[in-house]
Image 1 (tube, rainbow, N blue to C red):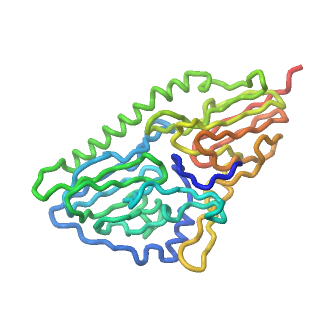
Image 2 (cartoon, helix red, strand yellow; image 1 turned 120 degrees about the vertical axis):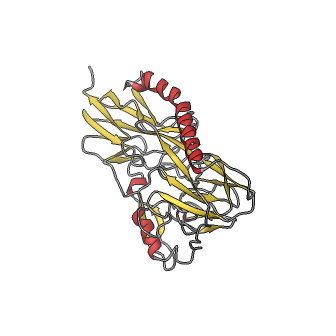
Image 3 (cartoon, rainbow, N blue to C red; image 1 turned 60 degrees about the horizontal axis):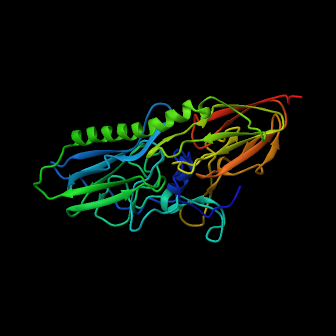
Length: 357
């Protein structure tokens, strides 16, 4: 696979590295972070959906509502539906993944994205702040698994935040003057549902077109002996659908399959067999501070591009970015299942039949 220094495109939704993060917190990552302040009496708690699920493998990569009002002293709780961080930036987006090159020796998850700079439930008084990535453990970067909260202690004004994992996923908190009437938490929750439904609906027509086209049936090889598998969806706005189009590809011996992620995709993927669940990150302990979150087997290519495979051969493309492709030639008849190692449930099969005379 080609080397890329920085992964700044729409990126990984389900990286399973809570254990690696737990090691980081064992080194005291959150030990000196700003701590919880009591919420003001009479203040309210507003819930923001960080991502939203649709039918099957569809996801809305948005904060919902995208913009809403609070008063100083109110709490905002982000309900994390997927793999997202919440960062109030000094500058714009930062790379989620750093690939080995001039700046880093090994490919790794960017520690500036992975680890928090504030404890969940603390008062947010402004400036650059990061929730870190979610982990299922007490004292991690979320208050409890799946949520992250801040008590808003800010002057009236608008404050932008983003998710570094999925570029374009942004939100705004508008702090109103004391005494100004604002929509309540229930109204905000209803607004969130409406925005998620609208986002999923905007992508549904394109997705349905893919399903009804040749991508949605059974792929076969073209005159050159190559079959093409669309990997994920592109140009579907803030909706992503994590599936292979088509689910089944039928070719003859010595023909090939190319998996391609559309340029307009919102996520990376892998083409892998067997799955490497929970092996995406291989933490490397450091003398001080949290471990280096280097790539594990799930993210690492283990076979050359355009390699020939037979029954029983394992293969992993490694991380593929939007616009990239991966090709294998199948030299022996049989069934070859494959999955995306990043997105559970995203799977397909290549069926290879004996070559015709």
